[in-house]
Image (cartoon, one colour):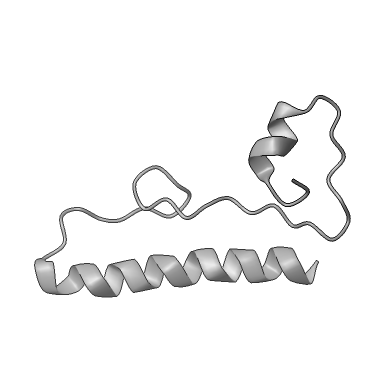
Length: 65
């Protein structure tokens, strides 16, 4: 329960434990970093990897703080 962001939102006045880092899930369509749907097929995999790395960088910064 302590590591579920869903539960944090369901329980009123829930205090997140100090050891829990809540990070948004990667969303290639509606998230902070989005896919360019106009790319050629051969460029799509490279674009997905680039976006995945951006989300991973954000998570790493969150954990280090």
